[in-house]
Amino acid sequence: MDKQKIKYIHGDEALLDQIKPLWESLNEHHRQNSPNFKEHYCQMTFQKRKYVLLKKAALGKLRVDLAVDEASGQSVGYCISSLDSEKTGEIESIFVDAAYRRIGIGDSLMKNALSWMEREGALAKTVEVAAGNEEAFGFYVRFGFLPRKTLLKQIKKA
Image (cartoon, rainbow, N blue to C red; front, top):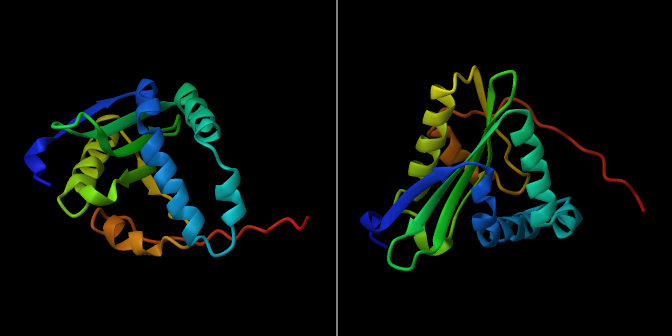
């Protein structure tokens, strides 16, 4: 893929529906790689995730960055970022289609999201990485994100 054939657009929650197929690929990745919470990803739907993101948008700010293949018009990557009322920015979700990886799309999406957070006055920035997706740490470290704590969650027995 030629990086020059990728265009970047951004907007707010109105763009969420455009990321649905990509988000579903990310959710499937998490389902396959989760060591303990596969059921969570099986039950998670785009509509449920969208509902949570719309609530965040109503209480703060939400930004959607899209990477679009100019030749096909297809969205090939996205980053959703938020800023809450306490000025904490969060990378909510980021994903690039496998066929478009390793050409800088993820870097561009992250830089765009982080620049937006800076312009909006973010005092802190966070990203959560799902267990089983530790391979993503190297990507986030390049942007200054480091592990601070590990959250353990009890699995409810049926």
